[in-house]
Amino acid sequence: MKTSKTLLFLGLLFFQSWVHAETLCGKAVSLVLKADKEANVKITDKFILKDEFCDTGSPEVQSNFKISFFDETNKVIFEKGFFAEQFSHFEQFDDKKSGKPVNNKITKEGFERILKIPLNDKMKTTKKYQITSLKDQKTFTGEIKW
Amino acid sequence: MVKFNTKKSLTILIFLSLFSQSSHALKYTIFTDQPDQTKAQEVVDEMKKTYPFTAFNVEFEIVQVPSDKLDCESKNGIDRLVACDNTSELTRESARRGGDQVMIVKKMDKWGGSAAQGGIPVITTGTAARAMLHEYMHVLGICDEYEYKETEADFYCDDDIKKPNAVAIKPLPNGYSGDPHARSQHGRNIPWFGQIKTETQITQNSGVSLGTGSVDFQKLSSPNYSDQPLALSEPTGLYRGKMCNKARTPIPVWHPGGSATIMENTSAGLGAPLEGVVYEILKSKGANRKMAVQNVEEEFQAVELVKPDVAVNNTGRNIFKSFFDWIADLFENISKSISR
Image (tube, rainbow over all chains, first blue to last red; front, side):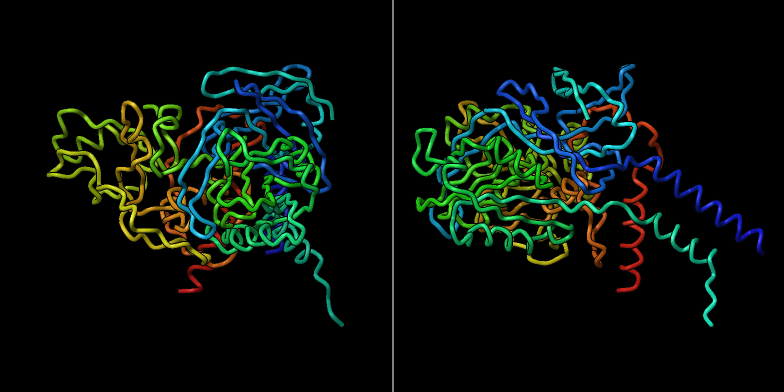
């Protein structure tokens, strides 16, 4: 009975550390991603926050881009699929209370969005990032410093 | 004297830590130049009570800024169409504050102006708060369902439209030999195909014509101010819309629900199919679900959306990458059992 309890205890300990190793956790980093009209996307800013943040690794629904981080040996340390809407919609409604659009204008002007990623020790070894458009495989590569 | 069982306590602590993860509430930063912030607060109140936002931990921060910091005005040659030029600075500020999404409420008495501008939803103080929801849906990749005028239809509409709430499908010119024929022809192109029950026809006229029916735009989906998904008023299917009817070459566009949604009229709700879509989108953004009792039907969760063609290198992750999602589902199921 004591042996089985000990084994259970050790098993949970191992399980817990294994689970946390599989899900990436670290300080939350807010990346500001900006794209021009041609959907060339780059990181224009980043903020390391106080909060802890875990990433389960799943891409966002409808991902049309992915961002990859590489260490100095060009090994991918972290990758995340994300979605960004490339059309801008300008709309006019018929009165202040109800909301039936009566006029609109659609343009393609580029976009900006915030993407949160975890910064752990492995991520801190990354030197380079690449953002790939999943539609046409166009890429943008830039340096990153933590 | 109370005995302290170290091993038991440690076991419990480790067990609890298995279920703990950094909580990530989705945070919306609303920048406004309206002095009393009433419209921004209306937006907060509206979103906080609307499903599926009620199912997640969401936070809002209203940030008062001077008008020149928003730099919004009527643009694009049409009065009431508002556009803002200082979005980069606002995005940086939101990111610095830990925000996930910027929103703008511009003090402007001209009514009815709103935008989803480059990933940022904007409304004016003269616009209904629900318009912010409509614009935010655009940011999430949801498209309009009202009829575009010719110029916008020509610009936006093409045969490749494939959104969580809309798909362009040209019916076969000679019709179909039955519902299975239509399903085999088009099923893989319909993002919500997995939600269409086998007993729901996607054809009419004895399986010859495509479509479960047409969207009844006179029937508005009800706004859902609960923490449960809306019951389906009609089955999820393939309903003919009108968005691209005025394109030079009209393109048939189809929607999952048969009622008007917020994407056609901001007075309407999201509608059951769109609620399920948005639920999955928010979940995929890492938003933590509330551990309250939810009767989330599996059909709303298993949304077969446009799958990303991305080979993600989940370094060090394999079967446990959705471990915490599994745990959340486990708690939901336990809660459901208790509530029954």
